[in-house]
Image 1: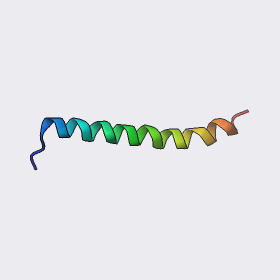
Image 2: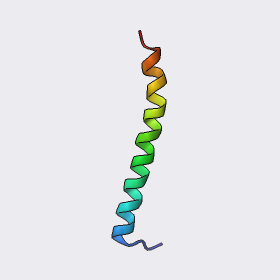
Image 3: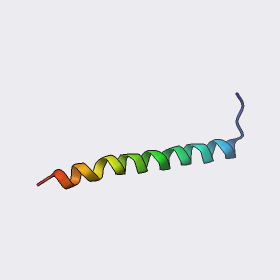
Image 4: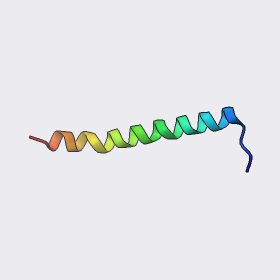
Length: 35
């Protein structure tokens, strides 16, 4: 599977953005549970 460098960079950036949003959603409830 051959992917253009530009498209691959956009894909990695979007996956990183989704991962950061997901980790933030997981992190906020834990942060509110902390004393």
